[in-house]
Image (spheres, rainbow, N blue to C red):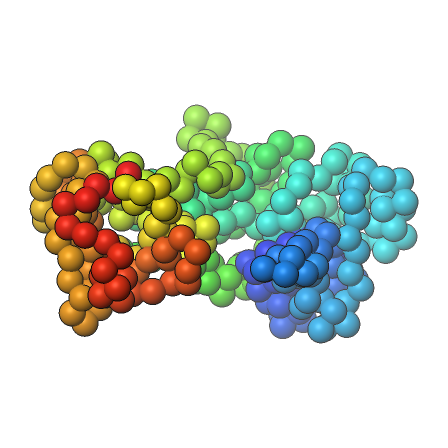
Length: 311
């Protein structure tokens, strides 16, 4: 089976690697443009491009998926199927109709729940205890196509976006290989999604990362884990400086929401902050303009005081 692969981030790169290791031939990898990153804003290729180039696969980075020259390029390649994982754009009908066996997408949720750009983050932020991966026949809507296979994954109490993403990355390639094997033999099912159970996982915006200490400690714990290690939940010190939070845990305590109840610089150390219900024991932070550090080091540097109120 001859494939074209479309994807951009680390999850997509892991799935591409899984397909190659599974013996599939990938004619070309389609990914988004290199983007400036880091303090020097150097142009950095997407993970899919880096992997494809290392494995000798041609890389295409079209700016317009509807451009006649790009569609002609796809038709000339004559793929049996196009595999899409976290590409970041909706495919136009002209592209969906190109491959002989259609376009197959792997989505990081148990569809029809958490359609959209941030299914992993939103599932953790909402306190879900289970998620998974779903492969589907692509349609014109956003993650609305008929489903083929799914694989369930527990969301562990200690999971954050990074750890759950990495577990999904391990499962994605094999799930795609099983899906493509069924597609090749004509046995891939078409399971219609139940629209009544559909939900949307919107892209993470800066305002989504702000912590509201009026919420319960358990809710804020989920919020922090869903945004760690990036882009990170944040609050502000009384002087307006931002404090990002990498790791925390619910604990007992009461006070005005946001009030610093206790500080510890022993071992890991902690900053205990009152919430609407219970308290949050913060273990690791990123102060404004600095790198990540243990709460113990932040406390030891006398950069925070008891009774001050975070917001």
